[in-house]
Amino acid sequence: MSARERFRRRRGTRRRRERRAVYLLPNLITTAALMLGFWSIVQAIQGNWDLAAWGIVLAGVADSLDGRVARATNSTSAFGVEYDSLSDVISFGLAPALLIYTWALEPLGPRGWVIASLFAVCAALRLARFNVQKHEEEKLHFQGVASTFAGGMVAVIVWFVGWLDIEPPFSRVVGFSVTAAFVGLALLMVSSVPYPSWRSLPVSGKAAFPTLVGLVLGIVTLLIYRQPAFFAIGCIYLASGPVYWVMLKRRSQNAATEAAEVVRESDA
Image 1: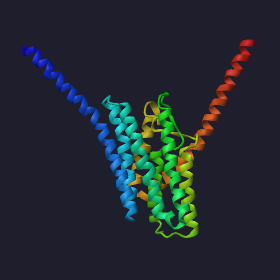
Image 2 (image 1 turned 120 degrees about the vertical axis):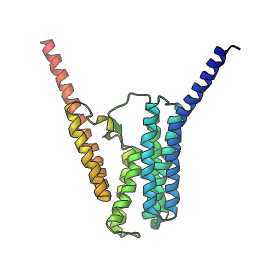
Image 3 (image 1 turned 30 degrees about the horizontal axis):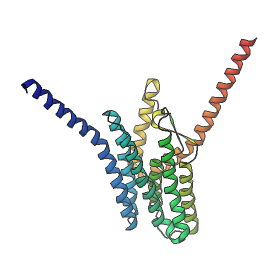
Image 4 (image 1 turned 90 degrees about the horizontal axis):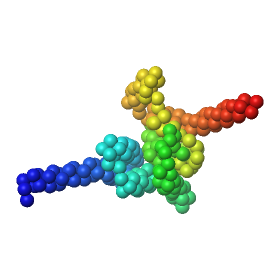
């Protein structure tokens, strides 16, 4: 074997190793998200609800990174997509369900675990629906609330109620309010209500600077007023779904009206 052939073989081996490392990186981030979700479950069982909430939120941060890293390194794969979905079921389905059960629903007995399991089931159904639709073109909105946001909102509710100095066991009013909010989040995941995604933010043109200013102000507000700010932003986002749905309906109606007018003018 000549020196040139040995050099080509070594270079090919090095490239294969680098390619494997690139494919490994997003899956390692997904693994971190899964482990954070499991850590949240352990903390919820031990009654450390604030730490359990942190585990879900940190898992959400990791979950938002793995896809971006995979796309940036051109290392997306069918294995990574399926692994990410399985990780999401644990971190944003089972972990929030067990957190809310041990925090608020356990006194209800069998009814409590049935209500808690509804969240896990809805998260799994939403992820399954997303995987079926993943071959379609990416849109500027989600169909239903993303499981990552829903799980994070459960953590935010735990923080906000603690910030109000309300501790379990809860009164009937507080318990009913928490349960209703939890069931509402579960149902919104499997609903068809459109929710805007980050891709819908105007990041170019004249609207880019106001968007940047708004994001900076939002981050500063979150740093200063963590619990109430997170809760307020989460509620605003939840309310944005119906508003966005009305806007899309009106836009489609206006487009249909304009098309009908064009047809009339052409017939005339």
